Image 1 (cartoon, helix red, strand yellow):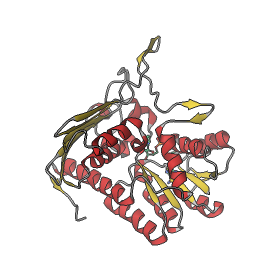
Image 2 (cartoon, helix red, strand yellow; image 1 turned 90 degrees about the vertical axis):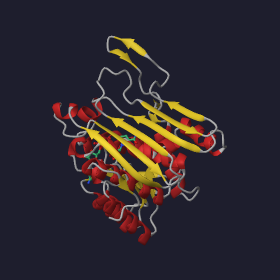
Image 3 (spheres, protein in one colour; image 1 turned 120 degrees about the horizontal axis):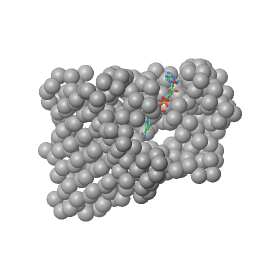
Image 4 (cartoon, protein in one colour; image 1 turned 180 degrees about the vertical axis):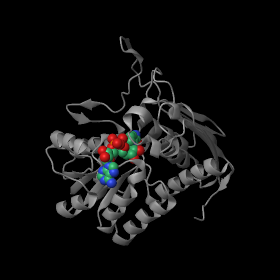
Length: 337
Ligand SMILES: NC(=O)c1ccc[n+]([C@@H]2O[C@H](COP(=O)([O-])OP(=O)(O)OC[C@H]3O[C@@H](n4cnc5c(N)ncnc54)[C@H](O)[C@@H]3O)[C@@H](O)[C@H]2O)c1
């Protein structure tokens, strides 16, 4: 199976490394418009790069592609791949509008391409345990959920050059919406959200500091999702992540803010990220396991963990959150446009 990487940045490089670990998979090249980023990727992997996704697809004869472009730039390369019958692993969010998400889905359905959205927590051991506990009836019927997935200002001001063109809804809530819908196992029927802007604007990045969204499911149960990327940089954890599922008989509480290691020294006091380690030059941990699962899907050994319909439903909730932020009112789902 010949795979191309579209977007050779942080995640594109992680996926290249992870997919190169799989027998039967050959990463053959990348599409990357920034010559500086492309040169770094070529040096790391000794493979060719192209300035456009179409060139990569047409010159390398791909079976599959990974879309790891910025949040707002998934549609065009994903549709162009799907039109060519190329299978896709699309970074979250699937797309940042309903029309873009449906354009990807329609092109894929017409050609028979598989589209898998990269909801990596489906391979996170803590959420696998929680999912099994809920499925096993240990918490009873789910009543309410709450999630806090956030970061320090380092992510929007230093890690991402394009943070002003996205928001916590797209960047973080892809994960928490996916998980809340997985635990509730019911459609979302309404969304109400509020957001706040100040800290990041003052730091020169024009995006929301925080978003809080209340999701109501078909059975009247609720989930509160809370994401900010304006935490101070002296916060010890780069990605605080807490998730709680409460039910009629019990509850599940996950806290991945402290990933087992605490270091104090001249650089300050930090709780480093240990769940995605690199060993022997290879990426490990749940984002790599997600890439391996996609490889298995396209090799015909397994079915995708997440359906395209589910990814479309998550996108619809994200669009509803952004609409609620803009219009200051509760938004009913399904959306009509
Ligand atoms: N844990 C997670 O789930 C997680 C973490 C980080 C990023 N992401 C997602 O992965 C995606 C990429 O993020 P990143 O951190 O790698 O960003 P990045 O900025 O490091 O890399 C994106 C690359 O895409 C390139 N690009 C832009 N438009 C392009 C196009 N049309 N064709 C090809 N390349 C193009 C850019 O030049 C850039 O090098 C985003 O959607 C982001 O939300 C997910």
